[in-house]
Each structure stands twice: as C-alpha cells, then as structure tokens.
Image (cartoon, rainbow, N blue to C red; front, side, top):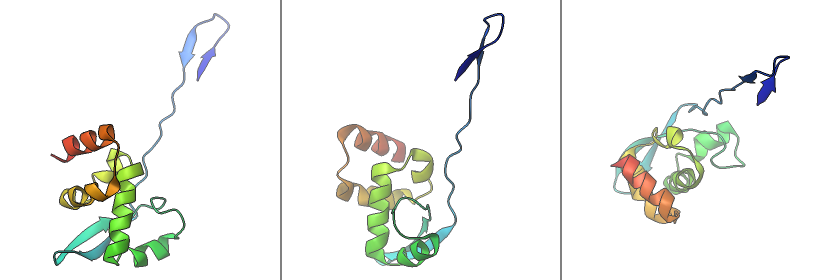
Length: 109
C-alpha cells in the first residue's frame, strides 16, 4: 500500500505476513516399519478439526495423503518441518508440475 502526504512524498507501508506454525507432531508408523513424526498443520486437509486431524494422522494411509497434499499446496517453511526422506518418498504420488517438482528436489537435496 502506498500513501502520500501533503508534500507528495511517497511513504511505503508494509505488512508482515507470518507463516502458519505447526501445532505439534503426531507419531505415525509408515510403510517399511519405520515410525516418523509428522507435523500437524490445520488447513492442509480441509475438513477435519485439529483434534480429528491428530487422530487421523496416526493412520499411515491418511498420513501419506496429508503429506502428498502438503507437497502440492504448502510453502517451503511448512514442508521443511516434515521428515525430508518421507517427503521424497511421497513425491511421486503428488504428481507435481515440473517447476514445483524441481524446486522441491533442490530444496530436499
């Protein structure tokens, strides 16, 4: 937003937009017998409440769907809180466009 005063000086006003923060983590058993901690971000899956999301993420299939959706829509500050190996494992199921896929591969390298 740009505002001007009486002397026609330009004053630039900026607003800071904070990134969403994780509300905690959930332990989840994933294929391969490993247990990982998945960060909980409300809004990645649209309909569950925070309490429902915490329960749902204990299921490996839901955890994978949640991670795939995060890969599609979430910004890097959100994705960097996920285990990187888990993100790499879920990337093929996300069917990302070429630019986003290359960017994420670079950031996860």
